[in-house]
Amino acid sequence: MNTVRPLIVQEVCLRDGLQIEPVFVATADKIRLADAFSALGFARIEVSSFVSPKAVPALADAAEVFAGMQRAPGTVYVALVPNLKGAERALAAGAGELNLVMSAGQTHNLANMRMTTDESFEGFARIAALPRGNVLLNGSVATAFGCPFEGAQPVAKVLDLVRRYLDLGCTGITLADTTGMANPRQVAALVEQALPLVGADALTLHFHNTRGLGLANVVAAYDAGAQRFDAALGGLGGCPFAPGASGNICTEDLVAMCEEMGIPTGLDLPALIALSRGLPALVGHETAGQVAKAGRVADLHPAPPGLRAA
Ligand code: COA
Ligand code: ZN
Image (cartoon, rainbow, N blue to C red; front, side):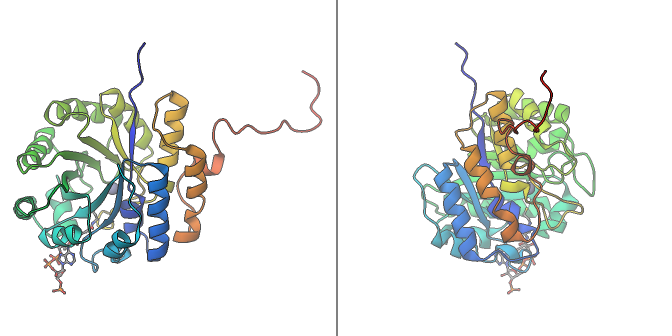
């Protein structure tokens, strides 16, 4: 019997989801959300960013969230890190994985990190040399499917960045479509070329739904052999330093699609929907998630009264 490969959902709402929000979500609410994600059994939860609080005020409480949350055995608690100072702060806070981030597009890297890509890697080399016990290193290539300033990024350049991360000792690689420029055929082609370098257990795809192709890109990547995907509850998210950025693919919409397609995720959809329905009260606006509004496919409606017999 063929067993269907599971799809692993990594929850990034607390980091990517909140980084672009103009309101500061209270630290206690972030901790409650982190604990709810842990209880749901996510394999990975990106908790926050150790970036400049001037650059991203919404995540200025990263250390407090790490200190206040409960940790579930078996869950990796991830911290986004742009530079050496961020890595030192993240290690002091007890992050389980440092997610190093730079962009394939030089212009986006300068806008986002105020560094060239080479300067980013100089910093990453210093981070990789830090004593870190069993803390994991993941390397993210942002704008891997297109830069909002420069357009398409050559596949060879993206794969070269992947190799540079692997040479530093990264055990995970993320290919990120920061501003939703990817399409399913492009995704399948890049995943096919990345998998021989990285391996399915180490490769993450990070999609934004900016142009409505987020879940189509997931299916293309999964069918090409990928299995790990970042998603944000409610479809919150976006890079504050990319024009027109908008939300990540939505966790509960992704899980609902997988349920309908018979792909196991191990996640409890009704519980995710209930949690997502609490987000507008935290961020002050409706979210992009669709299943939380429409209900599951299985949530049927009573027939209107007074119908004639069929
Ligand atoms: N955490 C906290 N503070 C930091 C920091 C970090 N990781 N890195 C630098 N700083 C502080 C410095 O100590 C300095 O503080 P001071 O003004 O009080 O002296 C100030 O920030 C400027 O330092 P500098 O090294 O010159 O940084 P910069 O101004 O060139 O900014 C980054 C570089 C990377 C810190 C900044 O661009 C950044 O945080 N970018 C992240 C953007 C982001 O999160 N995007 C979305 C996720 S992809
Ligand atoms: Zn993102």
